[in-house]
Image 1: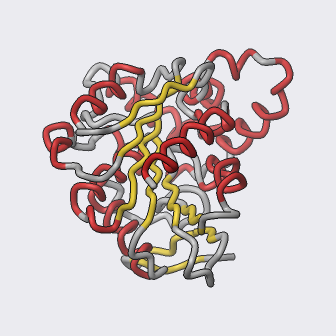
Image 2: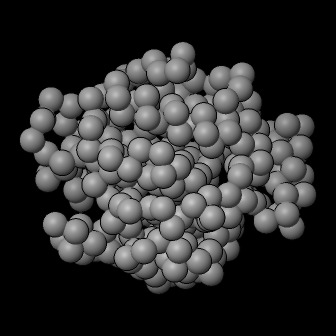
Length: 270
């Protein structure tokens, strides 16, 4: 199992071509409550031409649960240390939701590392104060009842109505519900606190010089279209793609649409 120790934390990662020095690199950073699996369809599509690296943030997936360090700045340092350990000097960086909070910080802090920036279902603003009490209530429920008991309430936050209602995707829903329920309580609580207590990056977005693609599902309830549009207007030259019939996890819900948007963007970048 590929584990690497960075910042004194064991981080799980998957590398499609660890010994290939010729392929351009794609790095995938997942969203809250998920792991590397949310990018399986993207890795499958692009690994023939790119070295694809996906990893689990501390406390989530198969990475170590640390006692502290779940703020976005520390997660950014973890990610930069991982890239350094894997000798990645240039990459296309993908960040979905929480991964997008980290991706923006990398673009601002270490722009020389990025060939392009792909932000999916994310925001440059702090958590909406109206949402914070709901998240704290969720954390309390997870602490006392466990994530299994609240998972059915979390699914409509993570997925759009089309995916949740599609009878042909019942097995997909079951797979992702099971994965959600498999989260470790301690890591989930700490990671969620890191997300709701994050600072915003909006005022700095004008400093981003990396070619940027912003992707949002038209059914995303967690970070709806106006959040994506706000980033699009703030990042000079950025592109905006709307994924039809997708919620907060478009890479899973509508992978073909997402992959098409990514491919078009990368072709134009080249």
